Length: 130
Image 1: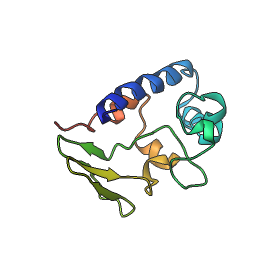
Image 2: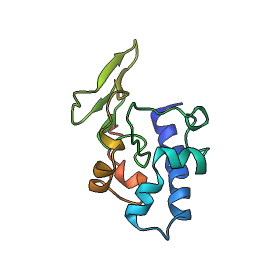
Image 3: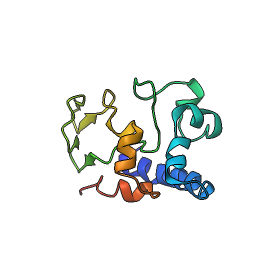
């Protein structure tokens, strides 16, 4: 699955949950996306929930910004706009991939609150730079 295809599908899943919870305050909505809550209440949001496995090794993982607003993709590479010290690179024959697996920046409530929008697509709108 391409980055763009995943992005489009994920955006629809995210919107469905946010619309369902439109009555919640922004803070309560962000809290709802806590990993421990989501794996119970939104089992289809992430394939890792069924395995009780987090995508990042951190105690309090928030899934609101699944994917990162600092992530960019063009036709030959993906990269981090903040050049996170915890990021890495995977180079293949056809593409250079940003490895975000050790970076926890977008999964903290404080970061989400600073970059918050009820539209995940709006927060992520700069991802693709073709």
